[in-house]
Image 1 (cartoon, helix red, strand yellow):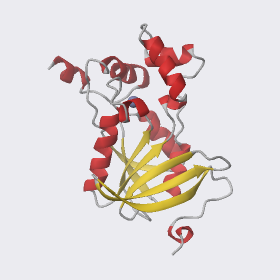
Image 2 (image 1 turned 90 degrees about the vertical axis):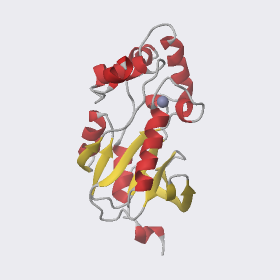
Image 3 (image 1 turned 135 degrees about the vertical axis):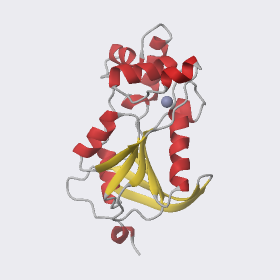
Length: 216
Ligand SMILES: [Zn+2]
């Protein structure tokens, strides 16, 4: 069977199109890797899928933005790796689910600029101040691409794993029904506590547990 019959055919306004798909045995169970490309470019995003999503309601989904420093280098400056592992573990234990992995490093500014921002942070700026000093908005990530990927996979509604209210709003504005929120697990440490507090205080992230954890 062709992938075109398994997945919805994208309309003329689609930003992404399905490029490749294969089974992927992982530490989190037997998943499928589905790669989408942004139309007219070679920019790729990937969805790790568990089970059959077509027509499914309340699918556990994490929409996760790439973080090379946290996920590959083991940086303690953020909580991306813990959140990604938690989400993969969750969908691996569920009947169905998906982790949409978006290649938008450093809140969308790219790896080199993220490291430049880290240099400013080493001199006292917070995440958002550092990005603005480099001429970028506080957060350039976009989630409409993720919404289209989920739509093309035939998902009816999702239970979104996130602490970020803006992500819920943007996915809904892009036509994805978010049935409920599943809190994303994040671990604080002495290097990322300032980053996590900034996310909570400036962007309204739902991280009520931070103060309890750090005072413990
Ligand atoms: Zn990170």
